[in-house]
Image (tube, rainbow, N blue to C red; front, side):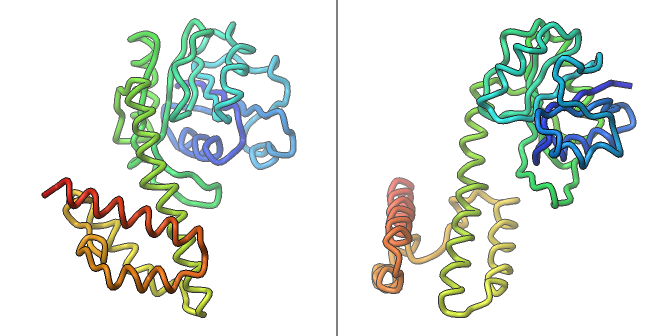
Length: 252
């Protein structure tokens, strides 16, 4: 049974707690955060602490915190005997701990969302084969997908994820705003959103690109720009349209 201490209480920490607690070979033995009120959701399930010097001995210390505090937290606990790993997509492999690693789940997390952890890809890295083997064992106990990924590859994946997830979700928010301006339920667009996401499960996104920019339909593009009453939305529309036009041109 692998013993794990989670450092953090946000979205990623909450889901890593749920996933690891569901594993038959892992046990979360403690959750740390500097803010006591953020730990209340865990207090009935596992020991909690706001004192970083009071962390229990564990096989893995999993830092699920913002990138700008990961190194300082790792420095404070570097004398621990277990592996000190973080869940960041952008942070490099830690150098101060003797045993360090990366346990990056490539998914978008919200505390209220239910997820099938077995489908989440875990991108793993460690400073030794022994440490990597332990991270693989832990990841395989909750997910069917584990990948040995270098820091550079992980940072590339994180960049790509911002485009396909964060930016795409912002476009959904813009679409919702446009609908609401004319009293149209956003729900009408959900079948389209679902079909678009399902297409790329089996086909290249470039091959299934549709719309006025893909057709170079300048009349529709001009009409759309006239309809938009936000300069920010016009700029985004123009940027996306020109990017699609350029990609189509490059593919010819």
